[in-house]
Image (tube, rainbow, N blue to C red; front, side):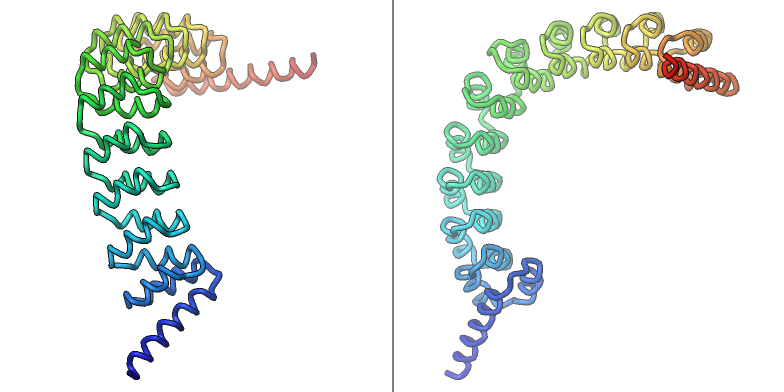
Length: 324
């Protein structure tokens, strides 16, 4: 009897102490010193503050109690912490589908492996972040294809489905805009494609620069890269293509003729012709391009001369602007 009263007294004392502390970090430190699962269970169930219950849950080993807390605690922080400790697929499925907080549902999905439950969440879950998390864990290619092609939610869900697809014909269809998908979906499909012919067409013709860049990233055909480097309307795409070019004639043409300094800079840095590099360092209309050319010169003394000339020219221009 005396031992039982002592235990109750200790438990009540611990609970009172934890409930009296307002410092969250201090509570977490104190909880590390409590190994008694009975005390931890009582604190996890009846602690006054959310962070007190959460700290106790982290130390609990009774998974039945953890599941109860994950399902019923009033704080989503505490429920989420409890969910992360669970592996019971039935409980996780219930939480993933029914919890009132999206972060708790998402945490439940992260621990779900039951493909049937994941399919339900992927098709009917809410909001899109929870559905996306479920889609990322699906293995059913037919269901992934259905979501990728027909889902009406935000493009993030469809993109997640596309990233799991293995059917190259379907990926090509989606990447070409066959499902009237957003650029995010087409971009995801382009990144999964291996058909270089399809990728080349997308890199040349897609209306969105992000999709063109995704397709371009896998290309090695110098003729296609040259066309894009010279003709794409987006300078960032042209820069991407220039960085993959090896054709010195095309690089020289771009280094001398592109209207955007950044594109010319990237081309200059790939030139092998030191005479041409020197000429660009002397004559380009943009300081940054001239400096890039000077950096690329093998004759470092000559490069230093150009640095001085460029800085002197910049100073003169500033003086002229000030005097105007």
